[in-house]
Image (cartoon, rainbow, N blue to C red; front, side, top):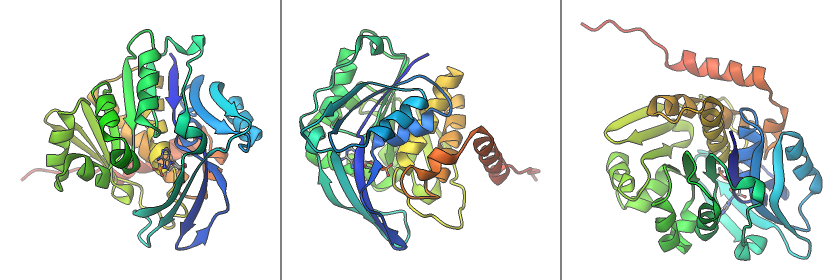
Length: 307
Ligand code: AMP
């Protein structure tokens, strides 16, 4: 059992209608590994950071079973920086600034111990880097999951389309699904995207849950109704970490098990939004996660007698 997680490790500055953060640690691979390490270890991380990235953040992940051998540290450069501002609904946001810094010329080198990975989670970063990781593996993973975002659709679409041909599961949000397909209806969008390569498509809809498409099948999972959403940053990546973590733990890549994985992903995302950055993910343990998954069961469980 081994999982490679690829993605940005970053500094973020976040504004919500209720508060503002200074530069805090974030990044797709950071959130994915905090989340997935509740279900599977070791995790083999691929990323790049500058000399400004706090070493203790990497140590905390190491303690969680996240192998940092594949994370390059460039002492004389700056880490990736992203800033975003959320609208009042906390579901939509504007990117204020993206500074690629070290990510701009990142050339990932997979350590020998990574080469036989069975599961590959390609988190958000340059599609060319995601492709380079796929190409370095000796054998095709049992399951490859890809997360990406509008930024790469706008700046690197040809590379992204090539990566899409190589993956099994694509995870994007509703506006990205519309952008990628050119269709407003998510059902029509899914049909188009499933022809681009992935066999499974997960469309995240923030507080409105997530949809899983596979051939003619559709599954819907709600998001937990929360009284307060403090900071949605990283919720998508935390969802991805819960999803892949559950798949790796159970070694079951069937559509039926992906349904459960989506519930696990949604439960993990519901923790992430409760505090700024990775703060809440650092606090929770197995008992909290089990209780939250139980809440999801109760949320959607009902009996009906057909008339
Ligand atoms: P999410 O809220 O799950 O979509 O992910 C937010 C995280 O993605 C933040 O911590 C950012 O550092 C990271 N991020 C934002 N834009 C990019 C990008 N273009 N490439 C890689 N990571 C990004």
